[in-house]
Image 1 (cartoon, rainbow, N blue to C red):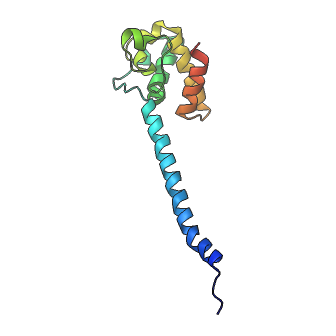
Image 2: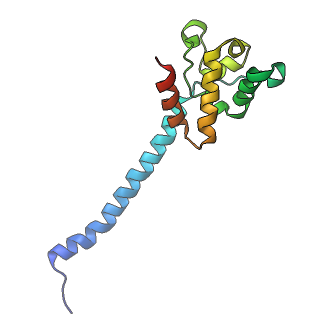
Image 3: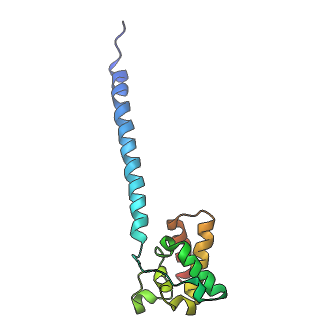
Length: 135
């Protein structure tokens, strides 16, 4: 029977430790990315107005708010309503008639919806909306 060299023993003992460390890193990373998405949320809990109260593109925008509220609640509204009206997120614009009178609110929702349909995640959608509307 041959005895393993000290180098081989080190490798044998280190392999499970490295495997466990990698698993820990991956689980922390996935949890933190989920937490990051949660942290993007503005916290709007009120219901949006019914799309049936509107027509045309306005009704479409309110329908989008109904379909993807978690996405719109994760977006900053670049009409500055957070500063001037205390809105929590883009979703807040859809709990009353505010969005019906604001092209910025509606165009952000249209863009977010299209990106969502393409399978983009909330972080990617937010980055794209920020890049387009933050100027």
